[in-house]
Length: 73
Image (cartoon, rainbow, N blue to C red; front, side, top):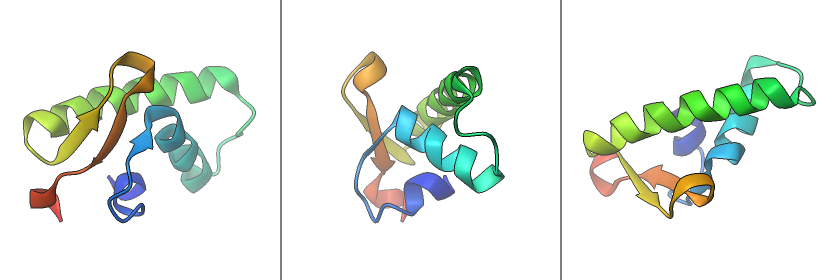
């Protein structure tokens, strides 16, 4: 959620969110398998937050972008 909050309402792709998580954790940014795994986990978590009304999603599949919902601020 911190990666999404830091955008001031701008939507982010799941890949961009994974990149922010990798950077924040100090992981190897060049590890493609790690980035893919984190992106998949982030997408699953974001979908659960969407169901709770905390996140809005725009787009489908790999093109999905997420941002905080107005109620989550």
